[in-house]
Image 1 (cartoon, rainbow, N blue to C red):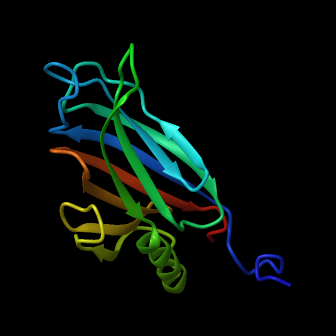
Image 2: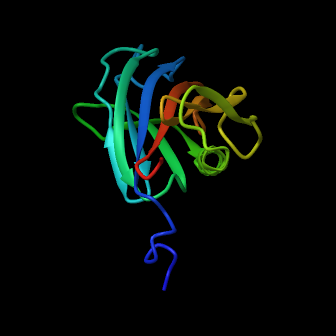
Amino acid sequence: MSEEAEGRGARPGVLKVVVAQGTNLAIRDFTSSDPYVVVRLADKSAKTKVINSCLNPVWNEEMVFSVREPLGIIKFEVFDRDRFKYDDKMGHAFIDLQPVAAATKLRRALKLTTGETRLRKVAPTADNCLLSDSFVTYADGEIVLDSRLRLRDVESGELFVTVKWIDAGAT
């Protein structure tokens, strides 16, 4: 019998992904772009609204994914909406959820229930898209990771995103 079947394994929870804003995005039309972001987690996806004629869009949109554990990779793909042809790619980035999963286990081990606690630092490396140090914190019942991401395969662009894990089985 699996751990999950015995009730000791993965607890259901909610992963919230907030796409806050983009900065210095690439020009894909004549002088600007009409950007939107597609967020993918495993076989699930969600999309922000299109911001017309803007290279520094502010979306502040929250996508909610119901998942068993904060595992895997969240992919962010930025596109320029085009009315009469295929949408143009404006770069992509990703966040590995491993630090969030590790912080969740640490929160349980420390039996944190209230207050705000910084649990983990995640530094930029060649293997991730981080522009600066990110911190995984526990606050108000959520494990939170705020990140500045450098877009890849494009001449310029950054995304500011927040990932929040709410462990439905947390005590």
